[in-house]
Structures are given as structure tokens and as C-alpha cells.
Image (cartoon, rainbow, N blue to C red; front, side, top):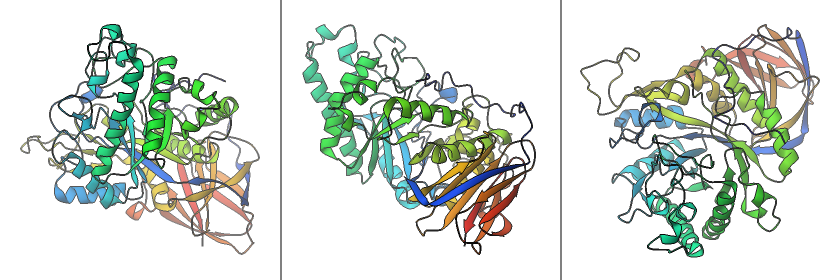
Length: 498
């Protein structure tokens, strides 16, 4: 299997698209198979910065700079209804954006009294189903360095894997006892969310598990393959026993750490889905990675990516179209059940905000007598859109309801700059999506597999224009068993059956 190069190694899609080696054809040809349903497309996910982080992901400030906490009451409602409505899942970063602790520092708790109430209100008002709880670090008690942030990578591990394990004053090297208590603590964290009426839809042991994963910037915890394997086998059964409806995901990096579990017929059932991070990579990488993962692990586990953003520089029109195609490729080529963007909102002062966010907010503790030059008129507690990232996602939020069904579609010739996708909404209506970044206008010819009198209406999106209410710009109707859709460069369209 080719190496699953991830965020530190994937080349990110450039601000300005690279030139094609050869010009694109004037037309491309596709066949839709409406009688061949594929995966259920559950809906999209996002991550929420529900606690503070330093600019450039450097440091964990004491200030409660977070959303929805910082937003004024009216801005909260606008955030819930205009941005978040349509998302199904919210990624919650355990030990990072939810990092309050009990007195023994064993269990996650709200860092201020209303933190979980604010998250619950956000989910309920926006209609988001639940959270995907994934740990950046367990609570400090369980780590050899006894801290969220630890620059000493040899101690930024669980205690049994640290250098002082045999001399630990509590466990004295009793690894079995430690793992039993650690698993119980992970269940306790879930119970805390559930007691606050927050549904836990998914659970992950560790964000990007890597050996010697330390640093002085933000919460992390390192795992070798063997360490992750031992920990996962100890904790996953406890999660399953507590609530079998929670989807257990693994492992979000190169899928090396979960290999021993996946190779073990007695343990494989503990994994409900495999997850990758693509972090701003060229959308063409989806085809390569999906084929490699399926060749290595088979087809019995759902596969999706749960962290996409641009970590260098910021967003751009070309990156906007690349994000659209990344989503399409995961649903069309990867048969993914879901797809996650990284952050809904980021603070205007954080250097990573432009590439990470769907929008920006001005922190509540900012001086209202000053004005940020890039956000004129924006007051503390208010937010604005990050257009290019938002436009890439909003068409799928508006026109692809939860539990749509992917539909088989064959391509006469694969072209990474000309992408198709087909799905049926729960009402049975077929939707065709086509996207063009070929540097020229293009005609997509699609055999729909439907009667000649079938009518579709089209809605066009571009990086600059998402239409009234972000519902797309109407581009007329098309009728027939074969559609010839003329799409401008740097545009994508949804064609929805009447």
C-alpha cells in the first residue's frame, strides 16, 4: 500500500492552480446508474473552537476566547441558523477545546460553568445530531508528563509508556489496572456530555496518533503502533459496552496504528470506521488513497476524512474549487458516509484563521474602540463569512439532505480537473453535481438513465458567487435522457430533478 502521507507530508493544493500538462478536452462523457444505489451520505461535519488557542496554534491561553461563548445573543442565533444548519456532526476536541478538569485531573469537565450548555444550545438550535469526541490529549493524570502540553516527547505519553512507569506511586507498574481505570475515565467523559444532553455520535482515541508526538504549542499525546494497539484494545470495548450506538473511529493519521486491530479477526469488530486527514491536499489524492486503503483493509469498513483545511497561507478561489472537488471525490470515489471541514469560526487575530475557517469572529474581550483593518465595522462578539471556504461547502449543505444515497456513475475518462457526482435525495430525486477547474469552459455529457421527459433545474456556484441565500445562481433547466451541461471554468453546478 502506498504511504498514507498526511498533514505534515501531503503537499497542499497551491493558492493558484498548477497548469495542466495537456489541455482539457472540450467535452467529457459519463453514465449515471440510478438503479445502482451506493452508500448512505449522512451529511457533513465541522469542528468547533469551543475554548481558546493561541495564534498559529501556539499555546493554550486562559482567556475563554471561543464560540459560541464569545458571540452576542443575536450573533449566536445567526451563526446557528445561517451557517451550522444542515451540518450533521460537530467534531469536539477532547483535551483541547474541551479541556476543563476535575480536582484529580482525571476527567474532562467544562472549563467554565456554561461551556457545555453553550455547546448544547448550539447543537440543538442548529439541528446538529451530535458530536464526534476525539482526543488531542487525555486528561493530565493519565500522562507521564501529567500535563496537556509537554515539550519532552519521551514523557508526552500515557504513563505505562513513560520512563518512570515502574516507579509510579499509584500503579507501580500495574498496566492492567491502569488501562481498566483509563477506559473507565473515557466512558466517564462521554457520560459527562450525555448528562448535559449532548449526543456523542462518534468517538476517537487520539487525533493523529504518532510516536513521540509532543511539542510546546498545544495538547498532544504520542503513540507508537504498539502503544496505540494496546490502548485501543483496552478502551474500545468499554466504549462499546457503555453505548453501542457510538461509532468508534480509528486512527486519523496514516492508518498504521490501527493495522494490528484490523488484522485481528477477533478485534476488528471494534472499529466502526477508518478515518484519514487530508489537510488541504489536492482533491486528486482521494482516488489514490482510497484505492490503497481498500487494497490493504478491504471494503467492510466505512472510510472518510474528518479534517480538511488549508494550514499554510490562506484560502483562494482555486483552493475553493479544490475543496469542492475533494468533497465530491470522497462521496463519489470513496463512497464516504460523511466529510468534515476543520473549523466553523476562528478568531480574527489567529494567523491560521484564513485557511481554517468558514467564518471569522471578533473576540468578546477585544477593545470595541479599535477597528481591525481587515474587518472594518466588525464589533466584539460578531462574526463574518470566510467566503471561499464557505462557498465550497454551502451547496452540499443546501442541496444534499441527510441520508441521501450515492448513485453509481461511470466516467469514460478520469480527469482530476473535471469531476462528477450523483446522488438521490431521500425524496427519490436525482441530483447531479459537476465541477470544472480545467482552465477552459467545458461540456459535461451525462446519460442520466431516466426517461427523456425528465426535467432538471440547475444552480451554479463559483468562488465569488453562491447566489441568493447561498442557494446557487439559477442557470435554467435541462431535459432529456442525456444532459449536455456547459460549465464555466472555476464553477460547479447542482442539477436537481424536478
